[in-house]
Length: 188
Image 1 (cartoon, rainbow, N blue to C red):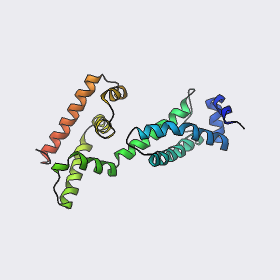
Image 2: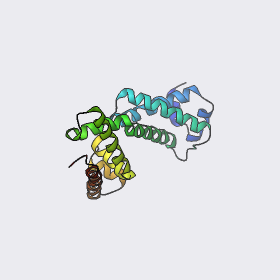
Image 3: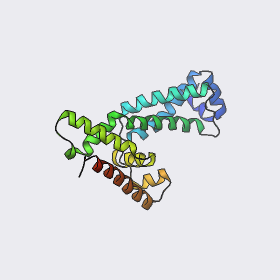
């Protein structure tokens, strides 16, 4: 069976095939959508192996949610979009994990951290706490700008703000973080 035939399938027909565990459709969906996910992860501080791992997890969640009826497509690109969103959220969770946070914090404040290992760990935890106290938008904005190296223009589009608003919000978020770290005596 030619794989090109699946491009003509409706979302409903693809969903039915997924529920039947149609191996050809599952393989086609997997291969068809991976390049987009890989590109998204590579563009956001990830590597190819990480992209493969995230995509496998996302595809399993995608498959489970469709089989259990948790997700039903409502438009012509719903399945691909849903798989992309699951992958994106799994990647963002990875970026927010303690492993990434500790690496980033040490690079961000290298001259502010004491040389003693116990002091360093304590400082890292206090910095993480200060970052966690920021609002969701601030954490997302700072993570995307400083760690994922997204442009102001890209961030403006993501948040639905103007570039000027994005710059102002980034400044305010950094000031909140600095203020909190100053109160903790972590920076002067």
